[in-house]
Length: 489
Length: 94
Image (cartoon, rainbow over all chains, first blue to last red; front, side, top):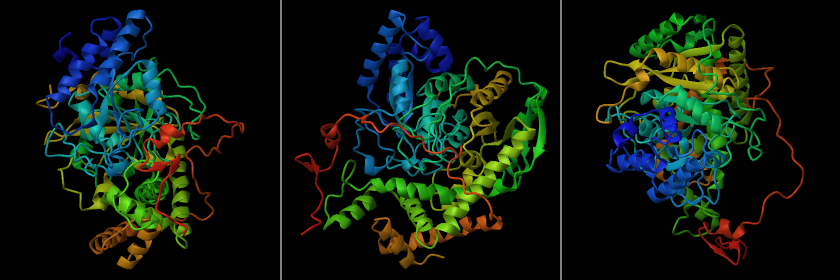
C-alpha cells in the first residue's frame, strides 16, 4: 500500500491491513510522520519523536510476524499532551510543564503500549485543557483544517485537527466540559467521551477530577469502538475507576436499533442555537426515524444552568489540583525570587497563562471562607438536580440526542477576550460531564460556510456500546464522516 | 462585583502575582463570571443532597501495605533544584 492509500483508510481498515500484512507498522508510521513533516502547518502537534515511533513500529512488526498481534498492534496513534508518557515530553499545553518529562506512563498509554500501538506524537491543546478553541495553549493556536482562519475547538483541538487532516489515524483526548465532543464537532470527526470511571485517569494531568474523562477522536464510531476496547477497564491506581468489565464495543456495532427511543431536550433546541446547525440536527433525527427509531420531546430545565454550575465546580477543583505547581518538584521555576512565597508566586505567574489564572482565581474565590456554601455547595446540589433530570429522562428514552455545539467553528481570535462567550460553547456538552454520562459527537453535515456540524448522543451510565452502535448505524447510511477537508485529501 | 483589591487578595491566597493591569482585567472578567454563576440561585436546592461524584460511590480502600518501590533518584532528576537527595527551596527558617 502506498502512502496515499494509507492516509485515507479508517483505523479499522488499517488494522485489517496490518494483520493481513498488506502493510507494515513501519510503513504506516513513516507515511504519517512524513505527512506531519510536510508541514501541514496546523500546529496540531507539540512533540513528535519519529525515531522512537519507528522503534515501536519495528517492535510491533516483529510481534505481527510472530503471530502475537491484537487489533491495534502496529497502529500509529496521536495522544493529547495531557497523558504522561515516560521519557517523552508532557506539557499539558503549559509553560509550567514545558520541560516536564514524566517518569511514568499514564494507564491509558500503558494499555496502548501493551496492545502494541505506536505513539506518533503528542497533540496540542488548551493549557491544562481549559479552553474551547485551543487558543490558550502556550505552544500557540491550532488551525481548523476545514477553514484555517477558524479554531478547531478545544481543549483537544490538536487531536481533532490531526485526525480531520489525516495526520493520524486516530487520537486520544480528554473531556471535562466538552473537550472531546466540541472539537470533534468543529472538525467533522467522531469524538467519544466515555462514562466517568470507565477509562483510567491515572497519569492524565488533572484539571477537574470529578469531571475529567479520557476518550477518543476518530474518523468513525467503528474506529472509536476499536480504541475503547483497549482503553476501558478497571485500574486500581485510579481511586474513581469503576470495577466493571468492558463491553464488546466492536461486536455490538451492528446490533439492531429499531424500536429504540431518542429523547430531544427542548432546552437543546432553543435560543442560542444557530438555525443552520438546528436544521442539520433535525435532518439527522429524521434519518434515525427512517431507521426505525422513535423520537420524543423531553424537558430538562435544570440543564440550562449547567454552565453556571460547571464554572463553580470546574475552577474549584482546578484551583486545588493546580496548587501542586510550585516550582519545587518538577516543571518550571522562575529564575529569580526573593524568598519562598515570592518563588511560588513568580513561578506560577510566569508559568500559567491568563485563562488558567482566571480559573484558579474563580476557584479560590468560590472555595474561600464565607463563600463556600453560596457557591460550591450550591453547585454540588444543582449538580444532583441535573443528574436526576437525566435519570428521569432515561425512564422514557434510551438515548438523548441534540446538537453538540450551538454554532459551528468560529474565527481565530473571535472570542479570546470574552470568556463568557467562550464558555457558552459548551452549553450542550457540560450536562453529561456533571452527570458522568457517556456522550459522542458525530458529523451530521455542513453549514453554508462549509463548516462541519456535530450531532451529540448521550447515553445511560456505561452505555458506550449502545452509543457507538447508534452512531455506527447513522454512519452506515450517511457519508458525512468520510468527507476530507480540501487540501488534506 | 469583585474589586481590584478583592482580586489581589484572592491572588495572594492562590499564590499568584498579579500586577495592576492584570487585576483590572481580572476584576472585570471575574465579575462577569460571578454574575453568570449567580444564575444558579434561580433554582431552589434546599433539601437536596450535594453530589460530589457522578456515581455516588465512596473511595475504595486497600490493604495498608507497601506497593511502591523507592524511585527517589528518578523523581528528583526532573526537579528544578536538589541536593543530597533533598529538594532545595529558599531558606524559610533563620
